[in-house]
Image (cartoon, rainbow, N blue to C red):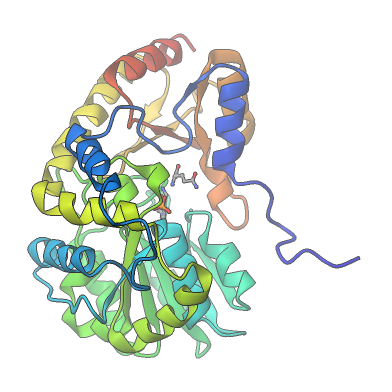
Length: 377
Ligand code: PMP
Ligand code: GLN
């Protein structure tokens, strides 16, 4: 019998918890996706595009108009000028972007540093391509321990993957953290940085500092973005990568045989829509939801942890139960009618910090109903 290529991987926690929520008719605050309608203007643009000649293959790297609009967005957000022809790639969500970048750039035996708790697609992708994942735990407060990270760098290290704003914790790195990262990368010019910034526009009091603002590391930098998060369209699976031309050339070699190109209608819609919206309003929109959810849970026995960005609120439940976080999330779903995500699944060694994650990208009524149930526990 052939061995599995991913022997330690089962079904992703997002599928597991969403199914459990559906099976038990629980309010689903587990998998991260909004449950409110998307902007009517976006839908109207989509309807209009369907009548246009946009139904055949798009150019492999992306529709030129969309690539240009993405470069405009990056320049207005981070004051960085990118060449839309050579440094940007439209992908089928951030997930395909991450897969394609890692596949293109990581060779057998290359070490890739992953910071735990980490988003669940990083490690399997590195393993599939023959790389060696090196998983380093973030501090108790989910912020980086630079000594530990620097100690993990060896002559085999080829990439560091970071995720800021961070899923699952909702934390954002300080300027000092980003400066330290820059210094480490400058010291190790062979090491690439894969910066997953899919929640870049969902930030609150403290704005995230993008890796885009560090010119000294441009030659090493690949960034990952997702329209799914920014425009409440997770099901469209639309995102993009940026990389310097030399790296992007390699990434495109893989992309052309992975998907060739991404959904042409969605690209045409986003090219029209992008210049008409203010993505910087997203933070205030979600901040209101974060604050509502937190105020509703104030009288509960959950201990809410800091949430600087993303649409995730983490919580400790030690006052309620001594169960493992996985067991507790099952109980929460099946007995109390609210589904959440256990964070231990994002740790390479399964470390259980007894912290669970709620998604608050929901209409206010759903947040009220969920909080009512959670306050009874
Ligand atoms: N990275 C992180 C940190 C995420 O949370 C997600 C999904 N929510 C992704 C990547 C994948 O994004 P997409 O749905 O655009 O593939
Ligand atoms: N990124 C989303 C989350 O963290 C889920 C994406 C998925 O279902 N693969 O919940």
